[in-house]
Image 1 (cartoon, helix red, strand yellow):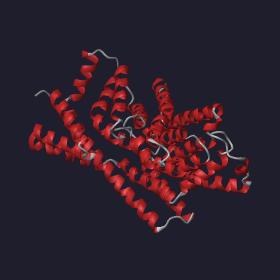
Image 2 (tube, rainbow, N blue to C red; image 1 turned 90 degrees about the horizontal axis):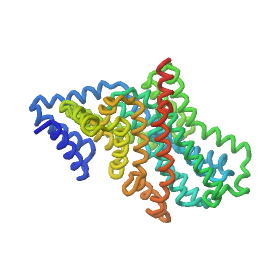
Image 3 (cartoon, helix red, strand yellow; image 1 turned 180 degrees about the vertical axis):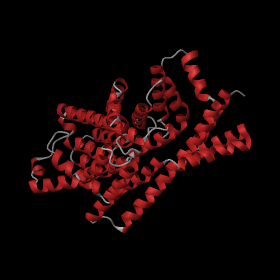
Image 4 (tube, one colour; image 1 turned 30 degrees about the vertical axis):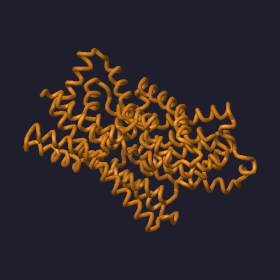
Length: 440
């Protein structure tokens, strides 16, 4: 059997195992281990061992539990509730102001946690009931929460970009910095869409009633100070890193400790909050480490088979496709896979093929990491089986039906596609900040 056929058989076997409901790391790791032992005998056992050693020696991986702990401390201690009250008071007088404030809330939650599920949970439990109670259109607000929560995997500290960095062997710091401007650009485009549409159709997002706007200035300033606390934590973590005073791992430790002490000062660090934060951090960190281990082993087998060179030859020599056409086809495949897989599974499945191919085609792997993340965001909300669609269905109140959820995401998907096109056309949107910081 040729190497190309072996690679195809491995890929098909992995997809089949995933469709049976097996855990991602189990399916990937099992296929990689069986293939390695079959192809190279007992010597194939060195592949998972080498992957484990590479994982344990990867110093930046220490950032993963630090940022996850920081996010859970901030969310479990209810500091995110203060954020929404701040946006409610300050943005409520505008048409669509509460929806705009929800996007702002999601950006800050993303900077606190780095996981889209956390943003979805906070948006669906805190923002969604308030928006519906105040007469906002249910399709509008459902789309706002789904689109805003997807920013969690793009705005730093993104856990997904940590995983991509490990598999693609790229610096985590550069990837996080590369996600800053694209994340803010996407959030800004969403806010512009909400503002314009609510101005043209005021019934979709009415302003707060005059009686509710009469909040004493002292209360406004108190809420502003409380709401800015997560921003101060983020600044305490990122400013030393951007200026080169601390390493990425040291900055992540500063962020985790600052969040912990902020919760103590606010008298919200109970034993229950601490225990839940630690348990969730341990569970998610271990899950990601198993996935990375399986992905590294799978990628090593693919490299040994020369599958990447065969695929490059197929696209460029036999089919005669240019690099940009191949890149667009890759992005379309992510959207297709996103209808039934989450972001982690997609990355682990295609990384052994796509990452080396992108490098061979001459594209920047940091820039491609941002493209992958945005495309994953789009795939999350693409019917019929987008990941975020079913998360929203599980968390939304009964009056929001599945068809409302499907219709709500159409304009926001178009906004995200527009953002993706801009970053593909102008790579410096993503690359300027990491080049500036690391060039100093």
